[in-house]
Length: 340
Picture 1 (tube, one colour):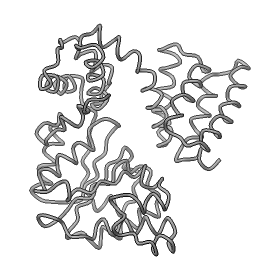
Picture 2 (cartoon, one colour; picture 1 turned 180 degrees about the vertical axis):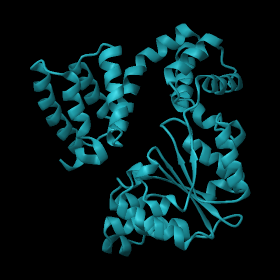
Picture 3 (cartoon, one colour; picture 1 turned 30 degrees about the vertical axis):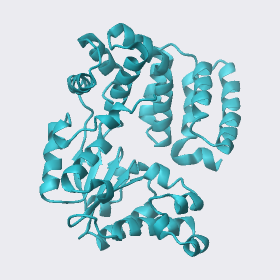
């Protein structure tokens, strides 16, 4: 998409969030700042909710909200960490040269929490997609939380709160975020398309909401894709536009779940593709390789192709497609592909 994303252009305020119980919890955190664990399924609006909280809590949210995407952050090399605009000011060449990657990550966590807020009495550090954070780094985070609790609010957004160590969970107020209902998703879509003055009808919004299945980001991007490609959002135009991108999104979703260790969700998507959509195991394997090309580096793709070759042989023997593709997904958990 060349135009600004609707997910960014129409970022919600607290009162715009579709889940009333979340609105209540966040307003409470504005009145009485506290550490939070915001947890819920993918696409439920966790990151958008934290940004809405920061806009209410800070007069300068651009500077007093520090966002660290854990899945990207822990995958960075020492060079990438040192050259990241958010962190380069407090990673000296000497520290980069003499420190291990683990030491640099711990240093970044500490420095991100230690500097004074630009406005007001505290700042907010968001650790997003935190299901991938290792236990040793969680221990380091616990120490940082204890040291800088007076000037820094920590918000941890995750799909797996149970993966957090008890000392961190005990220091954070839990904010569960359920997936929005179909009706709530339609209401959000209607507000956005009307603000965009985009031609639409009720059936079109209903179709996009059903296609998204509780994922607000997917719903908004689906509506925008339909409007930009077809000029209007109706059932017919949404089916035409989203049918072309739907399989790639499902494959991306399946890979995301597999990497996060959410095998029940990954296998559910696989079952839907095999049974409901009627794809063969070989077709899904081909789509996985195509989609993976935009998310893995050359070494990882080489390993994936070797593994896919083994899976392809098994598939040709005529045994269970589900078992063999599931074997490939199991090799993606927590970056296992990079360590093979």
